[in-house]
Length: 434
Image (cartoon, rainbow, N blue to C red; front, top):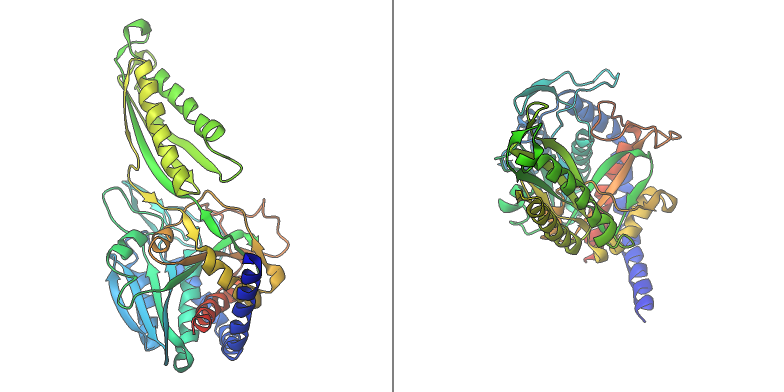
């Protein structure tokens, strides 16, 4: 009976989308017409990247574009964020679309005319700045969506909220930012958002393809700081010490047993990584203290809580067994929830994705242990977050430069599909809700 209902519901969704076909045809034509504008915007953003909470030039360009379209604009949201509201000519639900704006402290090596030459200070160091994760394309795509939908305003059965978000890549310790702050400042209210859509371009997925996953699609992340305190001694007389280096080594090894022995790996993946360990100043002194920094990734709330509990137990008890003490802060500077695609919403919108990209080009993907703060919106309202191909056709994904690297590269021919996808998801959702 349940299967029959699901089939009937899917047919209802497809029929509703079919009724929206006049608007779908308009979207396709209008998106194709502004493809070069989208690429030009992206290249400008790419050449002038800004780090999180510093996107002043970027947000100014976005706000000016939205105002030129007759969209109601609010600036300074969560420091540098921009929110645009487009009220359609017909009543209907409020749908939000989100793009992130910040670049990364990465020095670009890609040989393109619009390569970034920007330098800035980050954590006390001079660094290059680069859009090494595709946020430049996300902004350009959403600006294109805004232009397409604004030109169809009288036919839109609902309201569209365009969210241009700063600081997705997190901010320095002590600062607030990103989606969490936007939610705190009420971005999903006034008018109240009913559903939210977002996309992320992927440099290792071929142009023309869209990938998605119902449920947990990107991991929850908690960073952590572990401080192990022992007793300092001469390196020649270790029996006089409580060696925090040995204890720390045992902690690092024992933490890996959480994945191998506590996590049900048939259901969800998980990661515990120690990325930094610091202690001591010379070869013949056993130090008093060791500090470690790490990251924890999970695909469900239950696994996240289990990992945190086991980490605390392993750290404190291993230290105690070695005669040392340990302090753990988790999260240390940040936490993102699981990026969880609402199951019912994903099912409703699958026909829309397939109609836009072609059934053979909409692919189910495995979960990934990277994280996304789009998850903060999904904690409040049903959301769907999908991936857009940005790798040149025929290229080997293994050899394509990955995100967050100096050689990160995108094929710009895939951007127009992103414009069509977000516009159609919006209009098709509104059609289904009639």
